[in-house]
Length: 151
Image 1 (cartoon, rainbow, N blue to C red):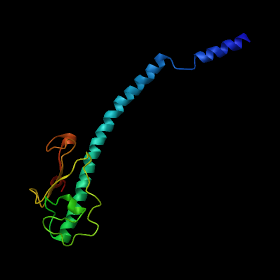
Image 2: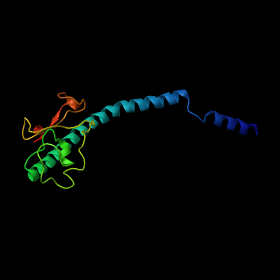
Image 3: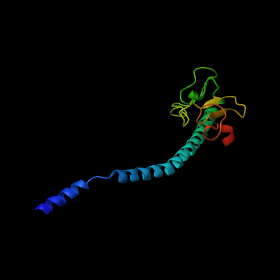
């Protein structure tokens, strides 16, 4: 009977991880995170830039539809909101489409407003996202994304 009790005690003493085993697991997890995290963040930045480009193209399409139906682009004052609700100031959009040209005015992937100027310096209108930093200029993820550069 004594041997059985001794065996039971040995099993109870080995139930958990030792401090060294726990440290090895933590080091391995840390190394894996150090290798994977930079790759994920780089991909996220590129995905946001691509999303902004897609949204700018969609806004351009809606602006072009507005212009075809009304004969002009919304003014800077009317802004992109003229694609969602009929403008109440400035030039009247007599053939404004019931239901609008978009469900809502999107924000860029960094949760900033798109910058719209009409008439634009680079065409009928200029449409931009100022990137991750939200201010004009910048590099990498903070570089401006401009409609006239996507054409």
